[in-house]
Structures are given as C-alpha cells and as structure tokens.
Image (cartoon, rainbow, N blue to C red):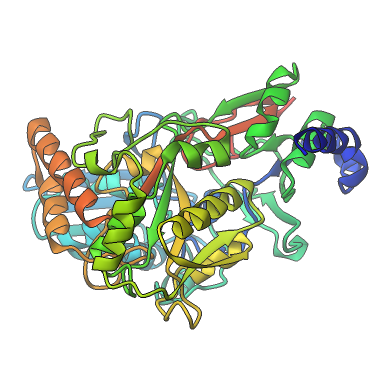
Length: 526
C-alpha cells in the first residue's frame, strides 16, 4: 500500500498541470501575484475570528495605528505623531495625512475610535488594555486621546498587535456593529482592495492595488514601515491538494504557497527556482481546545485525562513529518519559555487518564470532536485525537467539515448536541503565543468574552494582571513560572508540540517579508 501511495503521489505531480485550472494567460504578467493560501477565506470581519486566514485578509485590506517591526518593537503606522503625558495617563495620537478608505473617503477619528473599541471588546490583548482605559476621545477629525486609569506601559505594544485578531481601522458604520456579530464590510484603508465581484467561494479571492494608498516613507520591516504594493493584483488560488499546489509552483502557474505539506518539502527544496523558508521564526504550535462550558470538560479531571493521552511526537509526525516537544504555554525557544508544572503530563498514561474520567463523572456520552478535512494538518490531528480519545474510553463522534465551518462553529456556546462541540484543534504562531498578554487562548476571564472554549480561572487572571504590571525581568520570570504551573493544573488547552510552518515561493519574487501574519506588500515580481 505504501508503494502504491508513492506511485500515486508521483503520478499527481507529473500530471498536475493538466488538473490545475489554466492560469497560463497571466503567467507572463509581473504585475499579478498568485498565492495558494493555507485555507479558504470564509470570514472577512477582522474582529470576529482569530482564524489566521482572516488575519491574512485583514493585512491586505485594513491598516493599523501601529505595527510590530521585525524585533517586535511597536512603530507608528497610521499614526503620524503621538505624545505621552508626564504622568503617563494620557496618550495623544494624530493621524498622518493622506489616509483614505477604498471608497475614497478620508479616515477620521470617527472611524478610528469605534474601530478600536470594537477590537478591544473581544480580543484578549485589547481587553487587557480596555481594563486600564478610562476613555478614548476625539480632539478633532485627525487627533484622539486614550486616557488611562493607571499607567500601562504596553499601550503601543498592544495597538501594534498581530496576535489574535488584527486591530484594523474600518469605516464608522462597520466599526459600530456589535463586536460579537460579524459584519460584511470589506472596505478598509490598506494597500489592497478586496474585489468582491471576482470572489469564487472555495476557489479564488482577488485583491487589487489601492492606488489611493499613501505608504509610510520608512522601508518595510516586519509589519512596520512602508506598505508598498508592488503588484497591481493579488489572487489567492485555493488548492487543497498539496501535491497539486507544489506542482503548480514548480510549473510557474502560481508564485507562492503559504504553507507547504511536509511531503513536498524535499522536492521543493531541491528546485533551484524555489525558496523554502519559515516566515515566522519562532515556529508554530498545535493545541487541543476543550469546551469548558459543558460536561465533561467543565471538570478539570476530564481535561487532565486529555493531557495524559497526548504524545506530542505522534501529533507532529502525523501532521508535519516531525517536530519538537514543547510543554510551555509561552513559546519554547522564546525568552518566556518555561516548562515548570508540565512534568506529570510529558508522557502519556492511558490508565491514569481512564481513572480521571471516572472521577470526573464521565458516563459514556458522545464527545463531539470537530475536524477539518480540507487542510492536511487539521485532518491529521483530528484523526490522531479521535483514536486517542477512544483509547482512554471516550465515545467519539468525529464530525468533519471544512475549516471555514469549524471556524464558525467553534464560536457557538450551544450544547455539543445542538450545534456546539466538545473539542476543536488549531495552530498558533510562536510570536502570538510567547506572552500571557498576546496568547489569546490563555484569557481565562469568567465573563464569557474570552476566546472560544471559554475557560474560567480567576487565579490565572490575577497572575496575568501581575505580569503586565511587573517592572523587572525577575518579577516577570517568577510570574511566568507560576502561570505555566497554573495552566498545567487547569488546562485551558493542551499543547500538541512545536513545528516549522514552511512557505515556498519562486525565486523571481523579491521582498518577501518574514512576519507572523502573511504580508504581501513589498513583494516584487522580476
């Protein structure tokens, strides 16, 4: 069977040009960039979901007040000038001139302030800033202030965030839509326009250069600096079969693949016309997210049972052909990485897991496990989880759909048997995961406004508050260790390991940025 699989893959690679929709008509056009995204775009509201594909879309369409450079230093983006009062309680921001939405209307503080408030209502990084904020007020059409209740040294860092949802500035009408209701606005003020008329759901998403966009004068650096669109048009071309996508890249039918399959890695690395590289230097991480609202995973012992069924290498091998163990909730390999508290869970123990399930009161009810069959790595980890759940005594109902449907369903608090779920799995980049502030999955506020899965733990929230107020590295390190230990006790999610997410692009592309969210400005086709 293995030999047949190899022959099938080879056949696909050899004949893929016949299977791919013809793109040759534009092959010689150096003003069109064709990119294979890692998933199909289903949600365009940048505040409504943390799906990476939506963040990729937001980076195309929306602009931000600040942005992280390659060293994660916050730099002004839409802001021209800003000042901080001597008591550090008032920040005054003035927009830089020339900012226009895609419909040619000017960007003003009437758009900025509700956009910020909408983002702060549900994104964990923004929520923390909101706790420190007394008011956000307009001075005039181009100037606004953020007044704090007490000094908060992470204001600019927070406004630059590309972890979780993107704080993109949108028109006032869209910004005033309730943060927990998705809107269909597609107008931003970023370097590209979303061409709704050319959308082919499940197949193609099109963006056109925003000719009215005035980029900053600084060179591009991470997500900061000049966001210069150097092509006239960008097409996201969906190709769920990674072998077909690799063949299309080899043939020059597409220019870039956002995330390649491990099976294609060696072939593409040998191609002299292709670059294979990880764009996010701190890697990516898998996570299994239980729903804390419903039995059995509202009980900590049931979540501990999940942790005891996990062999991280099994997951990484199935999804990526290998990876690293990582038992830190704060990005192994980063300055914050610590594995304190993880010791009882570093090896599977199925018998202990079975005993914990009994103690949690599990009685054999079906466990609704969500899986995405249209993305190879999501499909792989869903299959591994289903088998592991069975090993420790769960009655598993694996419900497969496409990733877009999972993204929609994971936000539902309904009973798992009435449209909700018990478990979903996803991946997070290392930059977003490295801090208690930016790791969206670690918000454990008990108001139900935190990230999908809705863990509730007041003790962990107190530690997060202490972390953002800490003034020395020694204090921060002690709090990080206490938090990691606490998270292994309460398990807001279960880490599945660390891996490199590799992108690939043809070498006639110049200016590909190394960022945690895909940035397609600054790219030039030669």
